[in-house]
Image (cartoon, rainbow, N blue to C red; front, side, top):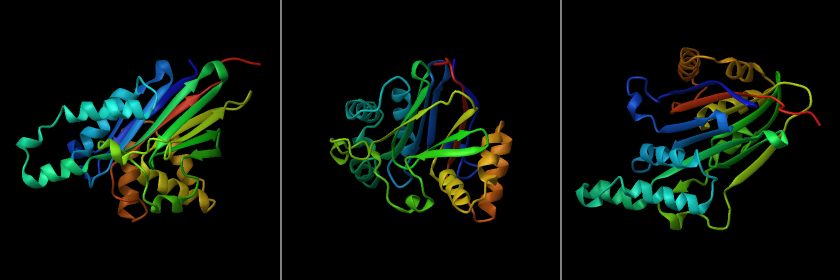
Length: 243
């Protein structure tokens, strides 16, 4: 097995309300699959939409056909006739979420990352930053991202908005894959652009939820990290065969 999960964890926007966390993730390290979704707070029941997405995408490739099946799963959870007029209106406008799917391909010594929205994957060689996707600059987090919608007409059917990146292993070196939702991604890229490696070092080294919670809360209190649901997955990727 080439991919090993070293840490997985999430910190809610408000620690006293963990059940309101609208991030979701599923892991299948035995199959080299990691999926993270970030529900958009301004939309109706984004928490359920994010969970529906990761539940299906842990076993399927990201495609508009798969998103349509997710929308059916989501609609089965709700009966608009039982909702207040305001909630029914919000339901009709749709729910939205970002998604990030990482798939290890050990036969090719590669990892493929597919993303819609603003969750971030980072590829690290030992202590050295290699690349990130779908964003490479902190300022990109200021733009309005394209998200997956429960209202299928709001999704692009021509592939627009889907970013696919493939990273190869090197014969030598120790690679890490970090997957995170947008608040942490923006914080990390901001540090990198300043030439400050401390954020990357901190995230790569996290191994328990107390460490992540302490980091997130201290950076929120200092005004350097947006108060939002925050999820981090740290995985180690090793070469499974030599050429």
